Amino acid sequence: MENTLKKLAILAEDAQYDLACACGNGKQFDSSRKRGADGRWLYPVTVAGGGRGLLLKTLQSNCCASDCKYCPLRNNANARRCSLSPAETARVFMDYHRRRPEIFGLFLSSGVVRDPDFTMQRLLDSAAILRRQYRFKGYIHLKIIPGASDAAVEEALSLATAVSLNIEAPGEKYFRTLSANKQFERDIVHPLKLISNLTMRGARYAKIKASTQFIVGAAGERDNEIINYMDAIYNRLRFERVYFSAYQPGLGDTSIPGERNFALTPEARFTREHRLYQCDFLLRTYGFQKDELVFEPDGSLSLSADPKEMWARNHPNFFPVNINKADKLELMRIPAIGAETAAKIIRLRAIHRLYSLTDAGVKGKQLEKARSFATA
Ligand code: SF4
Image (cartoon, rainbow, N blue to C red; front, side, top):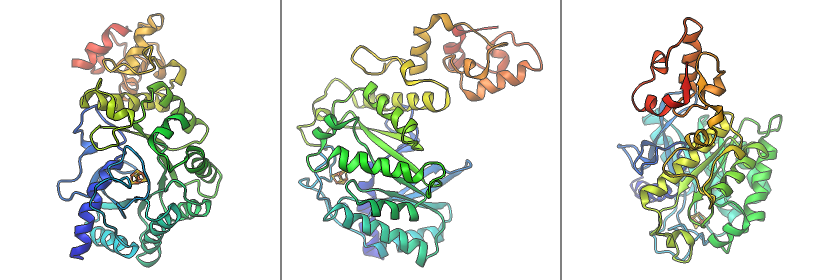
């Protein structure tokens, strides 16, 4: 067990390079990026139905035959290599889970050991041991290894609660700059479509959540190109979530654009990632269409103002919004007014007329931002 824990320490540390955080505030050290204080492999996350839980997140192996140029584990990189067997992976997770029930699930990924199907089989074996031998009924997230066979993808869906396959870049052109081994259509687009078909409403694995992730800034791609792909992933593939991970230079191959872009500070790279999450939110929950988003002439999102404020500044005719008459989605177009505040406004105005946003408890920076876009 001691040896297993030593390997887990290395593998969980390396799993940080695949950190899909569901939200962010543009700060490098926001809570969604932090691992638990009590273990480098435990991540605090919000669980379904609210509340917080801990997810054990690790690679099963950091050996890798692939050449992703943004990844510090790529085949020609100098890294401490080790692997957990499927039995070790299942045992170490169950040991944690039994001792601390708040560790509710496992997020399991891997470098490519030998070839995609061999690797996928090891991930599947771990999940199968958990499900069949330990009778674990909780959360298992399995990464789909690009290039894995259709049969392996389907088996992953039969064992997991959620699966993900990282798209990495918006299209073939950018993807090619990041890897010579992997092919965008064959290894990424085909399995994404397969996952979509198998998990869509009415399909056999409709209950399994599917997600993907972009690595932002590694390939020199533009925000509007990422947004176009994100929109297709939600509307055509019907994936549950799209995640973004800001590329930070230093560990990748010096040939990729992300290593040569000195225009953005580390902080600005995280702000860019945060802006993409804000757009994702506008499209998924605020009723925005992708064509409404405002980009700079070069296709990037503003780093100085959030996407909703940019839209508001570009649509003066829409404002001011009358807070006593507007419907919920109209209220949510006001900068700094979210779904919760909009619902509160509607609740309160049913009782009495509102004379300003302060009547609905809006104050401080939120009021400062919203005030000029609202009227009573
Ligand atoms: S497949 Fe690519 S991203 Fe994954 S570990 Fe290997 S080099 Fe890194």
